[in-house]
Image 1 (cartoon, rainbow, N blue to C red):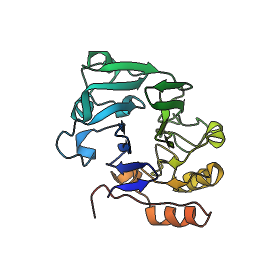
Image 2: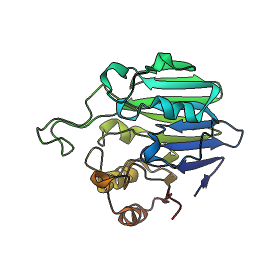
Image 3: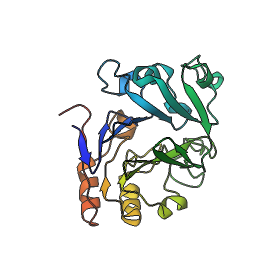
Image 4: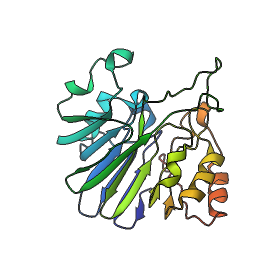
Amino acid sequence: MTVRFGAVTVDWLGLATIRLEGRTGAVIYADPGPEEYDVLDDEPKDADLVLVSHDHHYDPESIRRVARDDAVVLVHESIDAAEIDRVDEGPEDLPYDVERVRDDESFVLGPLDLFTTPAYNDPAGPHVDDDGSPYHLERRGCGYGVTVDGVTAFWPGDTDVLPIHEDLAVDLFCPPIGGTFTMDRREAAALAERIEPDLVLPVHYDTFEAIETDADAFVVEVANRGIPVVLDDPTGR
């Protein structure tokens, strides 16, 4: 199901993969792939801009499936293919205009305004492994905000709720709600109330057992706070 919001359309395509398209034609993907987790039709190769938040979502094959030949690919500065067992191709080996980003930048790419935010799990919080180590370390990933045709969309990345999130001006908010590795549905609903976006579209849930959640309960929690919210089922059910 494609969600239409103002001058943009947005699709959640599975796990963390989001596709945005502006009225004037700009197409942006956030964290495409891996293939077993998304519902992309073959190889669309329609992306003008591809955003990769951290190493867990760095997948060269999926970038190639979505990116136009002249696409720009933004990857967090920490991504190192040598540290990722499942890939052997680094960002700079891709046949695109690849740019490294930090987790605290604001910049312009053509008609698009972008910003990045930190994305990590608090070592003292609930999203840690059995040894007490955060699943996502500080300075190892980012969230992305992009303004296209007057709509500012924000994907926080794989992260806990952080103080910086509460100061953002966001129209379309796409929080992860699966818990375990990220904020859960209750934390995301409370953050949505503080951000006050014009629409919330949750992602990063129900793809596998560890991030299963009650999406309908999330909708109720957000709607009860007076925030518009919608679900997008990537399976088409």
